[in-house]
Image 1: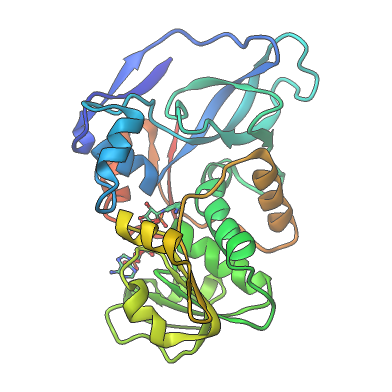
Image 2: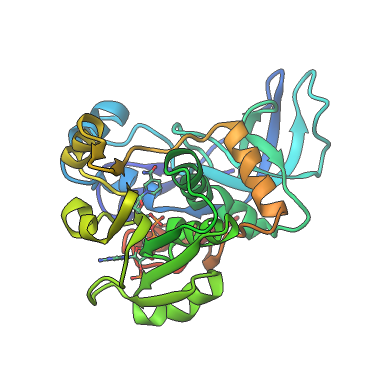
Length: 319
Ligand SMILES: NC(=O)c1ccc[n+]([C@@H]2O[C@H](COP(=O)([O-])OP(=O)(O)OC[C@H]3O[C@@H](n4cnc5c(N)ncnc54)[C@H](OP(=O)(O)O)[C@@H]3O)[C@@H](O)[C@H]2O)c1
């Protein structure tokens, strides 16, 4: 089978393909024939080593000093191609989707995964490409809006950068929770932002739309506390999806600023969080927007697009 590999921190050309034997599922594992996988902002950051200021050394201590010692690809959709001993919860040919976690390995034609872990049946209501795109932005938006910001119906939310993987999910989930959603996006994506459920949209290069907002979701971390604070309502929460080390430390040491709160961090990718997102989808609250779809052989081109941070929705490669 064809498997992608990172050879160094660097541009997309540092990705290479190798041939490897198809793995055998161990006891309690399934073998998945991967049909599609997303190429996310996270994939681009791991490959390039380019992370928000201050986090580079932590990344390299975590995954490798000279090259990323993780395998490319964090999420997948596909079908069950084999069952290990004692697996009764899946059937051969069944459509599934899931996460490999931090160790990666989804940018491959096959993978094995624990049957009771982060692999779930793919609902009939999602295509294979939507299944691949489902988790990255959706898990992030759901955790920050529901668990951390505690968004409630009737609140006003600004999603700054509303049409990528995270922003697109945040718009939909906030709207589903009964919030009024105001968006910013580049002009070519205004129709997309409105289609995802924003009530209004302006260019993110213009002054911020009129507040106050109960929650500001700063997707690219371009607003920060100083710009956002005057636009927060009493009790307002600033969600920094992208944050530098100093912003993270600041939020950890001083999360409360008057009546306001600053929220940063990374999201969880547990099976329970995945199942909650499926429930949200089934309730009509979330469907990932799939943008460019490329063949697996064009993985490097997909990475180029992902690291622009200007993609509409999610990029997916198909195997
Ligand atoms: N904290 C976490 O756990 C977590 C989880 C997932 C992702 N992230 C981070 O979140 C960020 C977004 O990820 P993503 O997958 O959503 O990326 P993406 O799909 O590339 O989307 C980026 C979005 O930001 C917008 N944007 C670009 N420049 C902007 C600016 N100057 N001001 C406002 N908006 C701007 C883009 O709009 P246009 O296309 O219209 O230009 C696009 O909507 C990345 O930095 C990623 O590393 C963090």
